[in-house]
Image (cartoon, rainbow, N blue to C red):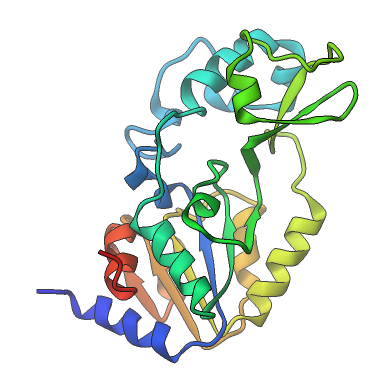
Length: 243
């Protein structure tokens, strides 16, 4: 039997005209992408250096070989495909219900599923730029290179992802805030809401329905109109009739 909360979300979606989705790592775990803070996440695995240290600007600048060894091994995952959550959101956008996806993920799966209005707060592994000439290269270019990828000009390539100690892109933040502030329904999914400043963006929501879908509880649960502790792909798949 389908939980009543799933049907309630389906009704909320049907009654909404301006939905915004704010998502985190849990959206992609059903595609085989490891999250960072779960028991099996990257932050609970053992490396020569803590992941937080490796994924920092300072470490990247000083230890590029070690950075790219970790980056290639743990953040560049081949063969991943969009799951029901990604597909459901793309369908809602196509139907005119969903106006924006604001994501903390860097895997590009929302776009792969067909979503157009995607605001990547932490950047994307699919984009890489030369620190010398500024030219951008795609992921395929990086994968064909040796450990530390180089541009044709000889400059070191840097993934267009936000590392620790780096600020978020101002235009991306402004657009995310604009959509969240305009939404009548905000669906938060697959995030513990523990990463700032990204998690702080949800406070700009002033609409009618605040929905949270996450396998574990979050600090925001008590402030939501509807909380569903379940797999987000199954929930959104059901609510949008994705098989």
